[in-house]
Image (cartoon, rainbow, N blue to C red; front, side):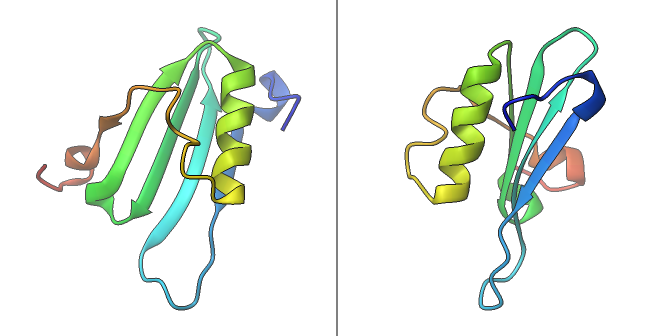
Length: 90
């Protein structure tokens, strides 16, 4: 994760739990304008959020924190619910 660059434009980390329904993941995309689009989904499309940053360090901390289950992993960002993009009303 420390070398997210042009050759590694996408990173997706998924949580697999046989007892939990839905999709649980965090992903990051390095865009052509050198910003990072960070998204996460908490089970359902209605709980899908997105933010952008220029900081690779903040992205790495967020991905690591999410993977470790830290409750504060997303605090460094302002998140937008994009569930409506998936045909789900807010």
